Image (tube, rainbow, N blue to C red; front, top):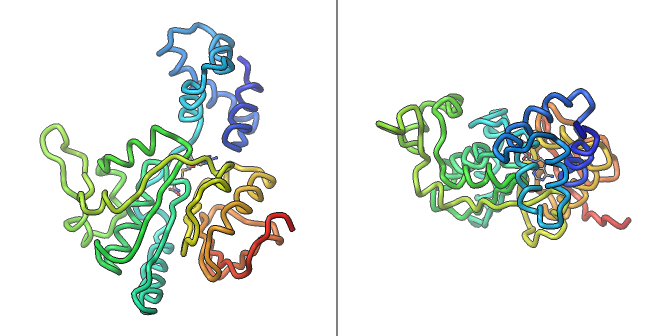
Length: 270
Ligand SMILES: C[S@@+](CC[C@H](N)C(=O)[O-])C[C@H]1O[C@@H](n2cnc3c(N)ncnc32)[C@H](O)[C@@H]1O
């Protein structure tokens, strides 16, 4: 198998740094696509990916090679903080609050944020929520707002009735988010390596959780260098408890566990 080529492919396309120990994982994920295409070798698949007309296939390969594990109320401390923080912010003249879940996977993180905002500020409150991922399959899934019950089990019980509709018959074992919440989230596709070209800015908070872990130090710096200028001065960046930001040049100051405050204008050309 052209392991090194596929490894280089996912690194150059998405920044995902798969160590040699992930060889079997890459192989098993791509094998699914080989079967669908009835190709009998990885080199035939590699040829297909390389073809100038292979953009759609390259996206499919990215979808297969990215890891999308997520669930509702993951790392709940962040959401306890979020609730208190947005209530504080809204005291200053009910100002507009803008949040971005920047590697949202299938959407559970974004819906969790939306539930917290709806609780704190009202479902039709003065807030805006953006959610993006490089993977086109997961954002399409997120837009439907339908989940296996299992993924929602960390949701505090008093929120169930308000925000989840229990599926019946062929939907039993699944939940659907209430439509008023679905329509409050703007899901789209974005590669974090190219987020400098994304026009939105002025975010109060960016959630960037459980994605830095796939990047090397250089890629982390590039991605964070793109994102910091999009956060307002005094705004926040949340990463996962399993992740670290080592770089000292970024205008990020830790003000809680895996929570950073942006407090100086960042010039990436400095
Ligand atoms: C493990 S999930 C994290 C989901 C959620 N943030 C959480 O913490 O539960 C990581 C996500 O990062 C996305 N991802 C990986 N590389 C990316 C890139 N270069 N640009 C945007 N998203 C990326 C993957 O597609 C995947 O959905």
